Length: 323
Image 1 (cartoon, one colour):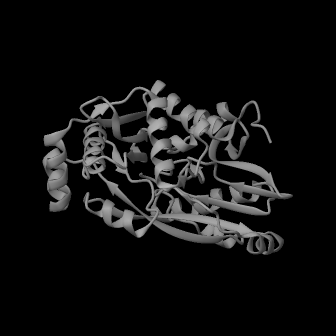
Image 2 (cartoon, helix red, strand yellow; image 1 turned 45 degrees about the vertical axis):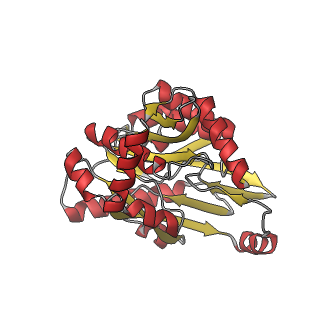
């Protein structure tokens, strides 16, 4: 289903805090312009909206998040009343948005950390879930440095003594290194390279993202990190390190440079998900606050049966965040 012609303009008229993943240009690229939205208007003013993407696979209609997009969910008008009034308003608007979603065999969306109330989804027959994430709030550089684990500070010091981080402007160079490193490790990406390149190129053009990296003495890109941002938050998207790189602290070094960059601009650094226990231990060393990220999902009975019977084990492991 193609985006309705007025959908992007409607989102501009909607109040509420939308993230980079809710931006029409991001959704256009991430979905090849197949996204749509439900919205609520009062007195010709948009007071709530929610993007979605319908795809058809094996005869089933799925309403799930596009690749490279970490979360979606409802965007609601800010309410200035009491806490009780705010909660009731959120319940009413979210429930109405849910009722307007098109029918599907499968629904799955994760929500931004600011979405703390998923009761309307539960009440509408969806299953709610929670995942956890790390956020580093803006602070002085010294305070951020001292909040980190001693071991993390040590490996960053060692890396900075040997090598200097720099801005990478060539998107193709980053993804060539990323692809090469995955191949060396026998891994596959969990996203489409073409769309990821288009998104990163547009982020750079709009000053909504940055690639930083470390080169060896011959100028070869050995490690690199990608982060993107909206008005309030920067998100750690991808990083990669050459398997032969002896600088074990390179990624820690790059994360530290990214944290300094975005917090100096008054933005929170969001690790954008914790894929496994190894990541949790690694991210915790940077002194971030653990916050919940809620979501909702629902599947038809037939879809559940098919999904259970159709499961198979891939011959190659999928990549998660950093390699």
